[in-house]
View 1 (cartoon, rainbow, N blue to C red):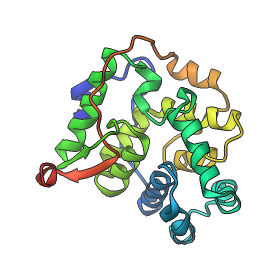
View 2 (cartoon, one colour):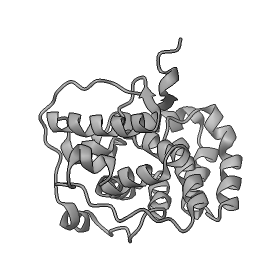
View 3 (cartoon, rainbow, N blue to C red):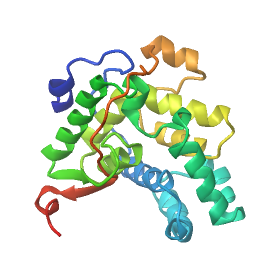
Length: 232
């Protein structure tokens, strides 16, 4: 039994039971997940400058990155301030495109706190903890963990919450946002075929986020070794 299953029990509403970890192309998956983590963060000048390196890394890992062409073109052709304003509108101000995996399953409820604690414990078991303002289910953080720390446990987090990933992908697709390609490429690192629509996701793990709101302790999108957590 995995640590995540010990903490949360068998997958319930909105989640699925991951197949045993097996990755025929781990280097490709690692590069895609790291690239996706960067591309889903708030865009700044450093990210824009890193786009050529990201293209090269994806190509070298055997990921053509064709799914990302619309996003790369938009980044290149659009003033940075407009890119940043769009990101804030679509990801920070809209729950329709939440980058927090457990929001899709539990909304802002007390039950979500248990899931967030489980994410944190998985990170802790590998000597890494998030620090700062983001919650531990923040997708770029999960992707960074899967790419840099533990491909196996990172896979389990992503696949257990695969319906959340797919619903985010479909919401981005339906709203015509170029970030859809990031999720599409990410899903190629996970087993199975992505669903065509929300109804198919619902048949697999039907749910809708509850609306009860509670306060949640903030975490950050940056992983730090436990030994450095209290360092100045």
